[in-house]
Each structure stands twice: as C-alpha cells, then as structure tokens.
Image (cartoon, rainbow, N blue to C red; front, top):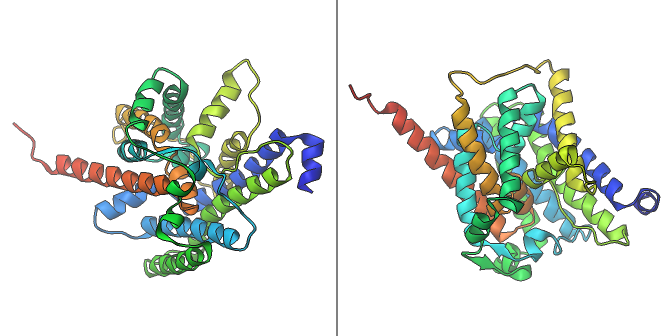
Length: 354
C-alpha cells in the first residue's frame, strides 16, 4: 500500500500525510492528558511530584517501550536516524538544554505545549510560539547561526556507535523493552496512587505511542521509497520553522513529515478542546507578563537548535531510540527548569526592600 502511494503521489505528499496522522494523535492525546514537561519539572522542584510528573513519565516510557519493542521485533531500524548517525554535540545538548529548560519555565510551556495551547485559544501561547519559531530560524540559518555553531562546536561526538547509548552500555533492544515496560508499569502505578483517571493515563500513553508511530511510519516510507527519506519522529522546533516558511515564503517548500506534523497537532488539539468544551480565548495579564514569555521564547528557540531538538524532539523522540545526546539534553532541560523554579521561588519569598 505504501509503495502504491509513493508511486502515485511521491515521497513528499506521503510523508506529509503521515505527519498529519501522527500529529492528530499526538495533539489530541497531549491536549486531553495535559502533557507538559514544564509542569512536571515545577512539581518536582516544589517537592510534590504528582499527576503532571506521572504524565511525563508515562509518555516517555511508553515511547521508549514501544519503540524499542519494534526494534526488537525487527520491524524498525533507527540506526540511520539523525540523532544516532550524524555527528552530535555534547556542548549543544548541555548548554542548549539548560537554556531551553530556563526558557520553558519563563514561557510557561515547552514548544509542543505552546502549539497545543495555541489550538485551544491561548493567544499567549500563540505569540510565544511564533517567537520561538522565529528565533529558531535565526539560530539555524540567520543572524544567530554563528553563535549556535560556536556553542555546538565546543564539544562534538561522532555519530553511529558513539551516540548510541544502548551500544555504550551493552543494552540490547529486548532488554531495553523489558526495562522500559517495568518503568512504564511503575509510572502507571504512581499515577493511580495520585488518583489520576484512566482516561488521562491512556492519553499520556498515546503521546508516547505517537512518537513510536512517527518512527515506524517514516521508516516504512523510507523502506519502500526509491529516494533517500530521512527517518524521524515527533519534534517541533525545526518543523515549526519549516511550516512558517511554507506559509510566508514565495518559494515552494518541499513537503515533509514535519510539514504535516505541525498542522496535524494543531487540528488534533483544537478538535478535542472544542469537543470537550475547553476552548477559550486567553490573553496576557498581570500574572503572565509578556516580557517574561518573550525572554523564555528566545531562550527556547536558540536552546532547541543548539540541543538538537525540543523537549519532545530530543527528550522523548531522541530518548526513545536511546540517543546519548538526547538523554543529556533532556537531563539539562530538567536541571535548567528546576533551577529556574527554585530561583523564582526564592525571589518571591524574599522580603521587599523599603
């Protein structure tokens, strides 16, 4: 079937269609489960890890278990994925991850969460997300590109085996699948202990399933295509810049998985929000100053490009295929976010100087 579609439509439209399908699943699941790395880090930093932390754990370990399970079954091969095969940057993962973590706390959401919230009528998220996209484009090929290249070039690591965490620690896909399933079961039990509904648990698991579906869909297209097709999954900063350029540039932008993913997520999140009666216009206010959101957006846009992906692209998609730099990046995001929460709390508790 895929081969017939490729012959009839070509690689670009088929990849975009796959992106839309995966995006619809991710958007609907993320909106209903309220999946958000920023909220998870806030819970942990404040010392009361609970529902939000559970959601992130379930999504992460669902993605890891399903992806590694496909690899163990011989249905997926991710060795050609950029997060494993290309030269990576440890300095970019650390510095960019820290910047992204600080930024998502200031902006009250990571790149994926901002896109989901935009679809539910949140104008703060829409404007902040646009700034993230513009800064990411500037960091990729614009005025900020030299600075990004300098950060990335501080400490590089070769591709293939050097970036493969499984190879580094001698962990095969079957063992990774087993360990992931144990961690997923523990995360679900933790969620139930905090009275999380089965609907939200399923929604969080579907976020992770969408990541695995992205890897599988692009792999199957690559296997049946006569052209070289990059294997990828859910990520937002890069695809968001491509989508924005496709909307505003005069030149034709090649269709890709990412081009379909972003509108798919927006439609999926928006549809479920309307269906649940949760769609509501939200603007900047006294408790959400625009300047803080914009500073956070700048840090996230640059940080994501330096780290090799956003909280989902590096943290979940890259983490699911056991990319070393992805795990380092998401650890840095956690560290940057939690440190920011602590600093902000300390500033709020400090008595005013009279």
